Amino acid sequence: MSRPSARDHRTETERDRGRLGYSAYLRRLAGVTQVVSPELASAQMHSRSSHTHKVAMIAREIADHVTRSADENGAWRAVIAAAGGLDIAACEAAGLAHDIGHPPFGHAGEDALDAYLELKDVEDGFEGNAQTFRTVTRLDRNKGTTVYGLNLTNVTLAAILKYPYAKRKPYMDGKNRKFGAYLDDADQLRYVRAAVLDLGEAGEDHGRQTLEASIMDLADDVAYAIHDLEDFLAAGLIDVGLVLDDINAALDDAGIVQDMREKADFRSANFRKTPGRFSQPLVFVEASKRHRVGYSPHYNDRDYAAALHDVGRFLTQLGDPDLQDYAQNLRLLLKDFITKFFDAIELNEDPPYADGPSVYLTSEAWHQMQVLKSITRHYLVSRPRMGSMQRAQTRSIEILMEGLADWICTAPKEHSLPPTLLSMLARNNVAVPITRQSTDSLEPGHFRALSDYVCTMSDSEALMRSQWLAGTEVPGSFRLALS
Image (cartoon, rainbow, N blue to C red; front, side, top):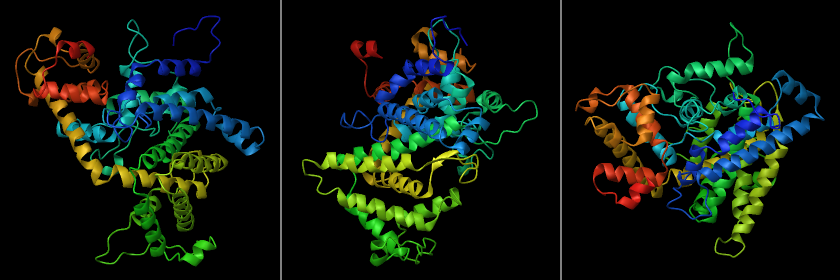
């Protein structure tokens, strides 16, 4: 850690925040998909960058809220003291960093890189959260004369770790899809966690988020559930009528009739019913099954039914999207959810479910958030209208990786390769082959370096370079100068 000047009174984590704020990787996110590519969307919609800055802002607001609330709550003060304190600046810094490793095209790009690396025997594949940890510890740097890595404090690095563990075995098991560090970054993760948790030589890591990481994770959920949903409702990209029909069908299926809804009596809700042999799975019923398995005992049918009812009422209140005040009405109604979420924040050393966070929402608000997140996830991200776009994005990543692998296997002169690509090969301790050979001869480290290189690109740059490598477009001098 470099020494600040005598007149620099920022804390170490405040300096972390500054380093992240000036990162070229962070600037890149302005051209990276959040849900819809920024090249294809209205400027009013969130890019990965604007989402990131909102997460940082919300994380700071939650941390401020928790700190001030603890002044009047002895139990909360005890939890914070047991954790060694709560660093507000680290929460904000983690919000800035949390998506810094995401590849071009967002989750479609993430899935494409993971499938490609798995095909090339890179056993831990690709994961956006692990790429974030790798970026801030091994790939990014403050300036050209410094060593690689942003030299962040352990508190901030731990706050970035939404999944505070490396890839787990069996590597190909879908349950182990999410993790916080690649295998060759695992020692760094363990060092960070041991330092922050004060584990010593024989201490055992409990595998749960730090307080700061819990706050960052909650802020990410709020931004996704509220601000991303607002984008797509305002743009008319979600069929509100279809969502309402599915909410009503799920409540009917759970035995909640209209009279019960009017009385707000959801005690008898039952989403465990076995569907008929030929019946179509109901969206929100299927979601309830996933929540029950993943978040027991925090999940319960009563609060889930109440959340469906509340979200259905919100959607009904939106009115006609063609009216002049629709967007403002939407924003004001969603604001009510944010107020509810802040009122519902809990702090407890005992998590609400296995390996859960210490900072979380009470049951009622948590269920509302899950329903809101399901709307964006199912009615936009998973809809056929997104399928063609995501297939094109996936193919662009595949062509890019294949083209880069083929390029370095032609034994090119090093001065003809992009300097950033050469840097990534060096960071992974692999070299450009000196004789022409098949891509089958490349090591896993070569493919990890190629994915590191791809993660320096925006959506438009990834598309442009894939076209160049495929030979479907020849760059002119002007475009080369910009690349």
